[in-house]
Amino acid sequence: QVQLVESGGGLVQAGGSLRLSCAASGRTFSGYDMGWFRQAPGKELEFVAAISWSGASTRYLDSVEGRFTISRGNVLNTVYLQMNNLKPDDTAVYSCAGRRPRALITIAASQYDYWGQGTQVTVSS
Image (tube, rainbow, N blue to C red; front, top):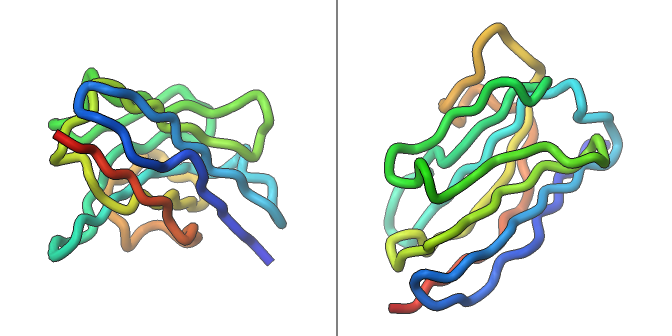
């Protein structure tokens, strides 16, 4: 059984930083494309960042470009989201997702096969 477990969320002041982790069990995700999505109260699920199975390609939501960095860890089943200069608008539940690799990484949530439960990120002003 595949499981994705997020950690690293919490409460931080505007301008602060957090690093989210996504650990996979049950399957080696070193060969999978991985993504981070977020959902704020009353809003739709939103793409945040994605990384290809090799780590060579990444994509970001425009509003987080330059502030957030997605990366794959030395432990093959781990993906990170480093979030710097956080803003109150970044407040949401953040979830990681995985899918079998394709030629291009995708921002579409419907294209991901596996999902974690999410971790809360709250940014105070």
